[in-house]
Length: 115
Length: 110
Image (cartoon, rainbow over the protein chains, first blue to last red):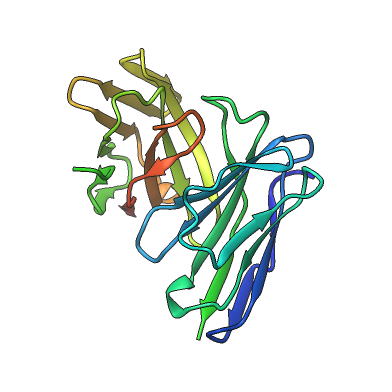
């Protein structure tokens, strides 16, 4: 594809529900990143995939958050038992190899609102 | 401090130069970045500078890096209304993870 795409663009859910957010990286990019951007803040790193494996998940806030990338392309960020504090824009980015200095290309984000 | 610091707001007149400042935290950051975010849009990479450089110029953009003071700045010459956006600086404390500041909202007055 031309760029990183994310679906849905907006998601409204109720506290306690489960949500899945999808990211389609740029074709051929082996590195994929998830960030979370709260209102008035810069994006914060959540997790980094190199291929199918999560190379660094140190940014995931707790065990309600989980992400997968089973075939090394599309990734899904999963949030269980959502809380109001999970409301944010979830950004996905990809880069060619994950090496230092590579440009990370960001998608438009999924705006999650937990009521 | 532990955070990447940026002033939150900047207002300039169209045609003037804008200077957005950033103080970063990790002296080992190999690359330092400037991203632009327009309302409802994702982050767009504007430019970056390698840590062994002092300055980088790219058309209307000039990046200055002072490693001693861990200070990064972005100058936009001849600022246009289309430059109105939030500008984030980001450092790379690891080899891949980006750590962002809170962003500077640039408002351009016609």
